[in-house]
Length: 232
Image 1 (tube, rainbow, N blue to C red):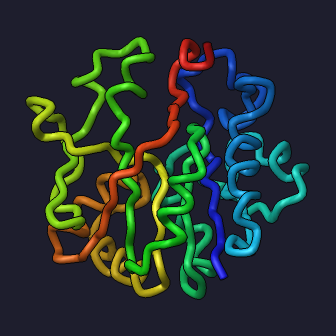
Image 2: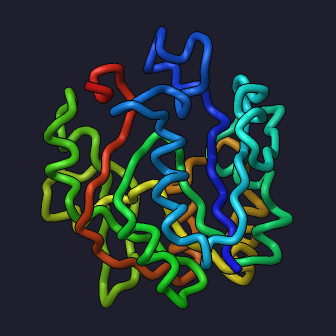
């Protein structure tokens, strides 16, 4: 049994008017919302992904209408992704979980790699990141993060890279954790102010504390939505 946890608490202020009335994940791309793209991809694995829950925050009532269990982060405006993720702790404590951001769309290969992994913490790496970022109105190297693996283990993530040689992929906004993996994450974040942390910061802290995070290069469609131009 695997639970898909969809992090959809934030507003996405950089999208300006696109999120004046709806959360970022309910904006449409190619005829359907970002969230629906992810749900449609997950539907191809119905025998393995047996439950789907949404962590909401901004305009939570709109997400509550979709027919899935909604876990509301009432403190969403001062929380980061990790703070929102802890709202789903009862699932993280008891089942294998795939955690997904909802300001992205991606191919089924990312989910398949998570479902196939036996690791306690597993990150499918976006190996197609240069093509993904080349379509965006950003300076590519300024927007990427260091991502270094050795023997399929993540040894460094986060911080600004000086060159592409320090980038062997990118965090794709999706990862898998077992209950044991989740306990190790809680242990390393216990003594820090983790509420506002993003997941790359959490993973970086975990690595520094000896937690094993496995990774695998995935070559598939992937797109992030941070700016209005990303929807074009």
